Image (cartoon, rainbow, N blue to C red; front, side, top):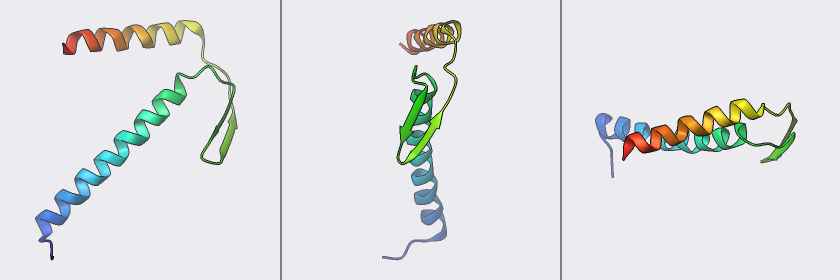
Length: 70
């Protein structure tokens, strides 16, 4: 099976978009984490935890976005 140029571009675009979505989801979940030490896929980092106000605003924004989509 030989792909034409357009087919190859389409397959690559969908693959890269899917991979980027997965990576974005992982990092967004980690950014909202309350953990000071994160160990993920062999990478370990120590960080400052974001304030409660920032977390509350982000969750409120997510709820607003979800209600607007329905």
